[in-house]
Image (tube, rainbow, N blue to C red; front, side, top):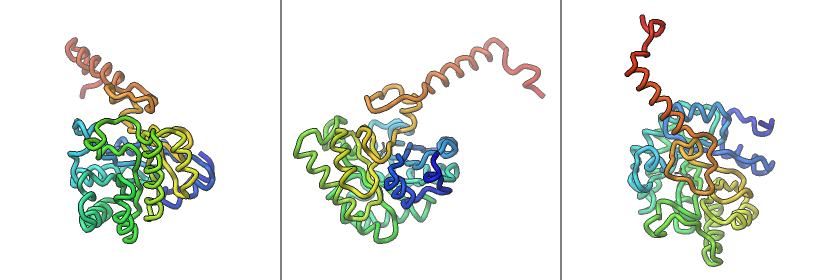
Length: 271
Ligand code: KIV
């Protein structure tokens, strides 16, 4: 790790500095203490308590069912494992889409009830007034545009966004609106790499890509996907760094067969 990136605690200011120095930002998701501790010890900059916990932790089809109470519960566990990484928490579906008072109260709840450093909200121009109100209260907001999974029923599919000119223009306008509203960073999900490059060049705040190519200021993946714990989801943008599902399955098969064969526990493993 470079000296410039050697922060004791990553903050919005550190991320800004990393963009300025052209040092790429690393981000992954976590929903529990032990995963957060491992990611933190490995030097990750951002731990996102993503609403993807609805899919990968709770087994739901979409991110929509997860609640504020559940996000807060998981964030408290994650926070105990993260010493250096900045913790960012997804505001769940319908915790900010309604009126601005509700968005404000819910962002405040996350910051009051957990040690998180920021909240993340999906949407651009249409949520900009809420982002402004929340950031004015001293709560850092990360935006999330492109493919926004909380709008899956409106999109109709998880295919890449911004491939046609009009949608690309809309996504650029969304990115600009978020920066103007005070967001400190923005996630770009599943958009063409050249569009992500253009946005990264326009914005002075960092862009964090997922399926948005190599020109973003940083990258994020869902930890369960990159570790090969999720096996039925392998889009092109996920690089698998391990096959943990196989490792766990083999270990459990060996455990079961040791028990059946009377090989566990041995004398050395007994009192
Ligand atoms: O919920 C999540 O994990 C996310 C990332 C994929 C960006 O929003």
